[in-house]
Length: 395
Image (cartoon, rainbow, N blue to C red; front, side, top):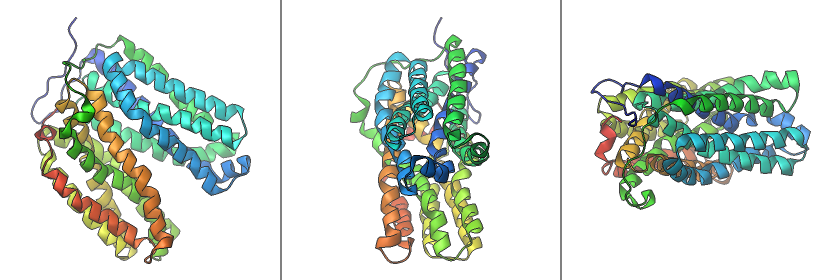
């Protein structure tokens, strides 16, 4: 039987073959399950610090450890997925998370917990690539891939909502029990997808890492998604130091990230309308201006609007960068996805502490850091001029 491929049409998302819907669903569930671990320990930071006998700063290392291996695992996972299939990589990613969660549930030492989070990071990084590639291979077009982005954002937000009351009910290991349950649900979905007929990568050309056409996509993704996460980490602290109440600052901080639940799927629709390139231009402009407004210390209501505009603008181009990468490299779509995402992950890993330093090491209580975020977005407009035309077509 020949591989199933989607047939795109202008103005509409490509049709998904019914027999491949299981792969699309598996990708969505997998992405949500693995992104849960990005926020689950932060949602119970005080309780984990008390249980391990460490400071809150040390608890933060549990997230840092995850992001290190999350970053390092993506490119190898993409290469393996292109060669052996996204489903196998997905199951391997789930296995890493199960092993890590099991260690967390069976041990009490902080050193063991840090090692376990390193293991979980391998699963979350490789699972992100595998989940998005499952959707592509199952016939999911730009809108479905945008839904994947929305699912990953929503899952991290749900962790912040669900873990605290769950911790009160079952104790400080609640983040780990919830992660284990979620990832086992993803395993069921991925196993069910093994009956689906998936489109395959075709052709064999040079290495993805040597393809300069992907570099502008990497820069643009880092300048939108990467800067959005960095700003989301510090905007609450910025606004509080500018005089906003904790509640108002928290609302603004939530807006800058949570609107991605909607803007990423909308971005998929934008790809099908062949307007991703101009939307990307205006997104960079809005991100740059919004960051500058936040740095200027406006009234709280204006700051909340700026945060909302920042989050929407950063989310709209998200899907198109992955779609463009896949179309540029049909011989290695998963590796292309990983290459683009690694750029944003690296920006987050390096940029988050650097902006944090501006709060204490430089005048302005973080305003200089946010001004730098705005400047970085505007400088990325230079890369926009070299943005591949593939970003304007549907996949």
